[in-house]
Image (cartoon, rainbow, N blue to C red; front, side, top):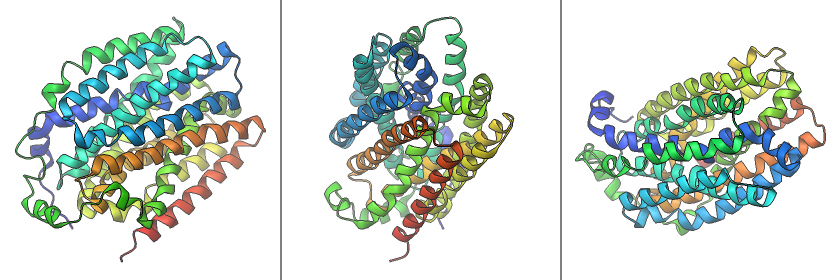
Length: 405
């Protein structure tokens, strides 16, 4: 068991870099499914797209993002973080601005590539990689605190977008987000990236010495390790199911006969639960290590899916989103801490890029398969049960991968 150092002193000393990670996680929002899906119904109506067609466009664009991330992900290992983050931030602002000018399926396709690659891809990758690399004894808590930007975005973006859609066209929302990102992220990022003596393991000499002696795998070595392939379904299942659910949420809620306005407000519950799940998960990672927790992280998601499928009243939306938020919030600290535990930190950017590609690939599959299932009139209960079976198989494979050698 690891020795825990005081969390409040850690936050007081490291607040700048933790805030940096949180801001990157938050402003990955315009490229995340929970933002794009809220306007999904308006996009389908304007461009006359079915669920399957919209899902296919989204999937192909996301797969291209995964291929791009395979090449771009290792840059975080080689380039100075300060200048790299500023360039990525500028590109993210430009992509968000450009999305407001899409005019049809073709420009929609390229717009999704831009915001997905810069948001879900690079912003998320930089935030989580930098946290996992700079801290050792507090790695789980650092990832969890930076990861609070995700539930913060989930709490703020959907309800404000739904509110704005009552007054303006959806295209006007994107330039607004671009301007806000430009003013709240770009000027402060260089200041927040400063090193302190506590980073790079300086505050945990024993763990630092152990890390010096540990093997630091290259990406090529990791790709020859069978454990990675046994762990892939856990990462893919998380991304595929959550992305598929949120991408088609408007249609799912129509099937349930629930109010979408009420559902959008329940994102605040989801965000609060994600915050709780992330903080608790970060503490558990620092106590027991991520390797012990991985087989169990998908359990809350399976419970929430079953409740969503069978619950009759929309009041259960709060229960569904709370349990789902606990599961989603707990996933990031565990998976982000798992890779440096297994493969070291020297090539962490390249290794996490592969893991992120797997996650992005999963997020590409979810919308298209669920869209095809919905177009084929497959019941929601059957879709949910299939997802639960996938989760159970992924958990068994993860348990097999991480058993003591």
